[in-house]
Length: 193
Image (cartoon, rainbow, N blue to C red; front, top):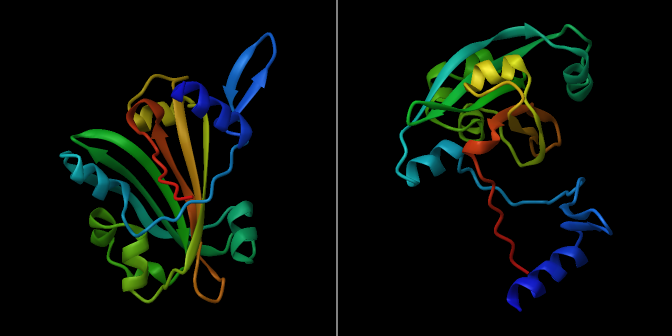
């Protein structure tokens, strides 16, 4: 009975969509607003007894592409701070992170900070306050480059987490994405009603 009750509730709130003759499926466009504290996935991995680590692939000024330029309100090709890293748990790649930040972040933040702590900690500690942000998580099939970076099979499912964070004046501080091997992570949401 409890399972049927929860299933009916998931249909009622749009978490599950029923297609007569085909079955029931997770809603394809589920959007959930979460309150995220400054805890970072590696912090959570450590609490689970795993050993987190990070390899910085790039932290430099780079010419930004069109979509990033639009978000920052700058011209295409404007040089912004770019961070690319692989984060590990117990030696296995867990996420491939790519982030864009204001150009001054290259001089303000030590690359070592990005090995140890979340951007949500490092940036405010170095003069870039963050007041709120948005995550969008999408499941899809990984391509050959993503498979190589995450050490998974080409065509394996991945979760892409796109993010934007702004300061108290609503100026963009960081935007980018993290790509996760879907078989290695679980997103858990605690909802208080």
